[in-house]
Length: 458
Image (cartoon, rainbow, N blue to C red):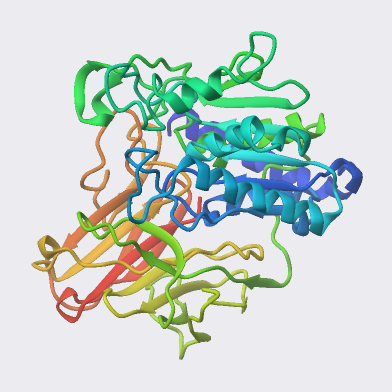
């Protein structure tokens, strides 16, 4: 077993033991300001779920933990030009500003903590620099935010928000005080990987230009004037959504260590979230949105942990309305579930999940579309990991017995979905494994317009 995996397991084991003393060591409510999470490019509020659970497990009130769902979460290619299904930096900032004001009004607090991953950090910095956010924010945590760009190109794409030489980042990085890149009066923390962040690389291989310098270093997410820390081995998303990153941000916000890094189960689990679809991008039809998929039908089945087979009729069923909510659903915190989505224009999507140890209103669901290239398979199965990537040599992983899964390459972790195209016929169990998490689903026939997703939680 590799050293990093061993370290993670030891951390979680120690944390689970420490949770027995949680009540004796929790900060007071006055020390727990409201927190708003801002997900990255193309992401949903659901990506914040496990980090929110860790805050809750350390006594943070659930009503003080929030995450935004930007309707069109992908950035425009050119920030100054309308692009269907994409959002501008100004739209992103305005959406965050409205959420911050809503949270302050609901909680009665005077200031919030903002935690952003990747593009989410841009909205936070823009809100503070341009929209009065400096008076409403006490702490900022930026994980894996490409603060100096994904690449630096002074000769082209100057209105692309990810260009380190572009107008947007030039403005943000000159908006600080006293020669710093951050505003005074706010506590700033950046968290970055040592060299494992796909968007903080000196070589442009991830951009399809191997051997070309990006003009960006591994230190790209750091900011002058902030507290800048490095967590070895974590990937781009894990800079916010890993136990190690939670430990760092909790200490930064509270001035003390968390009682536990584990997710402490609760007795009664209620799940809810939004069910949304794919956007109108004419090139791919696959741009994600966080808009309600009105009229979609959701069914939830309890499944056998060993075979993935259903244990009876649906335990929850709902037609999605204008609010996009698919719950509430009172779940068994030890049960495994299959979520089945049927919607016009999509394949019937079977999503298999691990047990939910705690309640969450951030369980986002999305149906899939079948590509023509996949219709030759008997069954199409995707294993997804939304809170990080697959790292060969760092993680243990397998899909349908293949390790590593097809398409997952060595090097900087940059893939969060692995696909198995099953050639044999007949319904059978299919297993996805990632470190200590194991999901068992069932194959379903592509010929009948079905796809399967094994969605990892950790």
